[in-house]
Image (cartoon, rainbow, N blue to C red; front, side):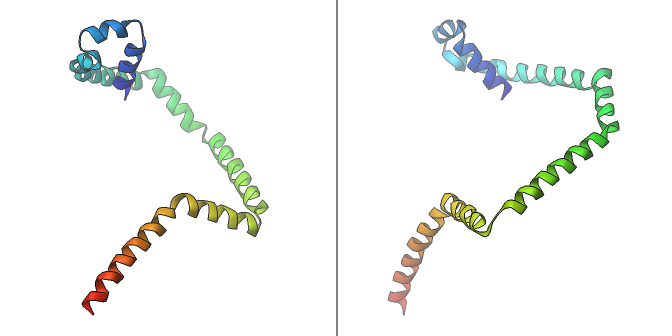
Length: 123
């Protein structure tokens, strides 16, 4: 993804017109593997640096803040759920069904009709 973003940046930059003269974005494809290797090496060096390791350790040491944040989010969600009325829940479910299950109804009707049509000849 990082390489694809880099290619997009190069194409949108002033170098994009020069790149189009030498084959466009496909001219950069031979650079993909070296780029990935360098990015891996850089990420490993960065993540293994003492500063990053200390920051991660400090983050684990301050888990009380994380617990407080989780508790606050939990309270917000519970408060919001308590505010829901049966009509609101019904509307949410109907919207979800319309958005995600509409095609299931259509295809269920089509395949049900086909199965009924085929079995009417077999019986």
